[in-house]
Length: 319
Ligand code: 5GP
Ligand code: MN
Image (tube, rainbow, N blue to C red; front, top):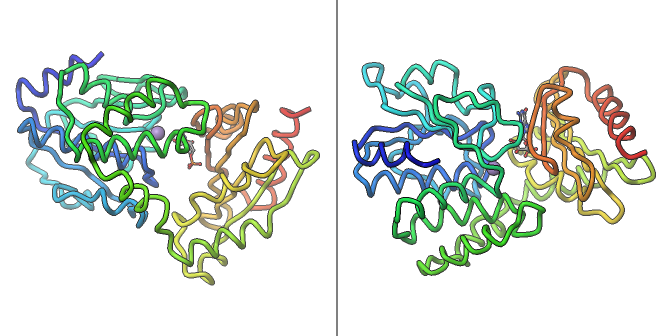
């Protein structure tokens, strides 16, 4: 499964690492860890991060991070472009032209909706891309250091919802236990990720929650974040992370939905379920994707119309 990595290390190939749009803990943590891994094995590498990094993940910034595609050298072809945590081409965190900067594409992902769009596809439906990279490094007999542990721990701990979700396995917990052996400061990492929220973000969450609507015997919770709310509370859309999970965590709620108004008539939908609804089925209807308990899609319609459509589709899955 990881033969391609042996080839990269043997030839000291050059790699461009690309996370997905609206980056989260898994794609940022795994980009950081993979980049360190290449540094230590003397492989030229860059991370292309053409999007805002949420402030709680800024500790994962690296010197070799390229913050815009414009900075890429037109005369340089990477041996490999490595796309992390991304199930389809349209979710890559850069314009499609970026793919012309590499000779071959490697996709490393754990979404069951993955479209296998790379020349090499390492797709394993485990907790996180961080856990896939952990397995790769074990396979290559790599001795973990604290820096890599910080990246892989961030991936696994965020994508498993701190070991609360169904993707938490003995293997994922064992991986984290082994990473702890490096002695990295996990308390500091947890403070960075979980106890470092801007006040404006907390106010946005509080307003979204106070306008929450319940459907189908209170089993579906739907909330919205509009452009008007963002302007008034001086927030960016990435500050809406964590809101949809708060809806799911209400007693009796099976599915929580967050409607993010990117533009009027362009709504990004985040879906979370608690125990039995497969929300990836609903997101696939609109051309999106994701996991059984966490999925998303974009719908081009007005907020109220999207709310109605999603509520109806979920109702059919609950009855
Ligand atoms: P979130 O709600 O946090 O944006 O995304 C939840 C999950 O659904 C993530 O695993 C993400 O990759 C996936 N997802 C969200 N939006 C989309 C989308 O528009 N297309 C696809 N294919 N997957 C999505
Ligand atoms: Mn992930």
